Image (cartoon, rainbow, N blue to C red):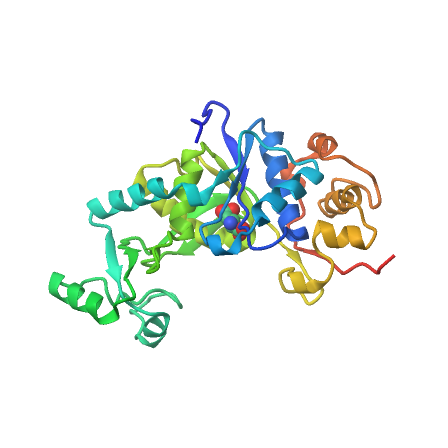
Length: 313
Ligand code: GLU
């Protein structure tokens, strides 16, 4: 990876290549671009392809779709799957500080275990946290050929941060997974290590991730990486489907290719997204570039945008 230009700071968009981008993803990408470019930052793209089996050219198609809307980026997109050495080094540093332990629990074990007193619902109950060396070895052997996951030994139960759109956000932190049993590095670890390596100092993403952020901030602190207030967060409202749930592929025509099939071209989609953000009049033709001059973060709508499948034309 090229060494990042840290003098200007950077925003980023970091899609998982799990399918073509839908309107919700595209709206978040447009916002991330507007926040970054509108504040004089560079804009970077990272394809979060740690689950490689899911890609199959999807990452490339996602990049083409961003281009179709006029969203450009600096340098080459970073592939998260090529960042393994840095991820492993970060886990090693945490381990050297005594902050990592092996966990042999299956999902079912975790659900069945009594939760620790005062622990938030769904928190890891700590089953494997205080094992002796002999207990650890026995637990390892008992699950072979499955391998243990690695968890962070956290002393912090909650943490809060200031979000540019949501204000103060508080979140619980449990002993979350750093590396899964199959060797895949966990999202929370990878995102923190990669954003820091890329020189990212502004993170704009869907507000479904706002509650993961306290864990990520804890990791930044433990690893000595830039953290708020040097790092800005803006979690943006999601796009919802007609049922009120987060927009999904089953909600009809939701990707650029599907909308083109319905006679709605890329420029019109950009206009729809811009109008949904209060940055264009309904039906107005705009370019991404022209939106920059109109963009004012404090005036963004704070509610989700509901998308209804358009009638075929
Ligand atoms: N890859 C994540 C997603 O597509 C986003 C990660 C992030 O922006 O931090 O939901």
